[in-house]
Image (cartoon, rainbow, N blue to C red):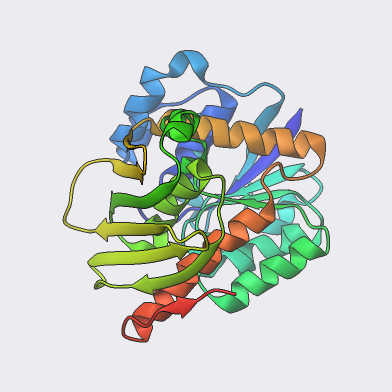
Length: 306
């Protein structure tokens, strides 16, 4: 049995609740709703017959606010609440960092990475060159680091990938989502790049404002990707692939399925002793995330990627 510690959480991000429940196979819908996440309780109820991942259990939880940790523990049957990260050392086989504010990631992940404990870090891994370089150095030194948006494992994207051969060559991809580039741009990037089998980007340009963010990515192949993150829109994440032979639109709705498959991949990686997701793919997408922000700060300059 793999014992997993979960550490978090950040405002508005329910992953510590939902991921712990998916792994442990139990949930308290009333507690999760009381905490402010009724949609999570709804999809856990709808998928209750597939809850639980064999061979693993979230056994420990830590949050900066103990009352939140107690709530997460109640909602998903976590046995141990700790008051400090050091208390998990020697007690867990792996860690999930469930916060989606990238500025906190190095500080919270460092003790586990330096101790050689496998870690999954919620998206986005980093939002500065300094932090990305630190994680890259740890990866080069053989440390187990896995990070991505669960949208990489969305069933809708896998279906689209199967049908991609009928469209190639791809000339244009458009992707639309809600909220901001900093935390949610990675969702769109993971969906697009997973379907396209992680092509090489050549340049990035930020064309919008903070509440209406438009990012253009030119691939080395010459194909164009435009990603739109608007605070005012509603709806699901949508991606459309336009090829010379046709087009395919993807409407990504099944959050539960992608979360579960992502967690299964992490647990399989821990069992096998190394991440099943190549860190180079994560690094490439973080490079786009950071370059787009640099472009915005430079007034929309095009950033050429090395």
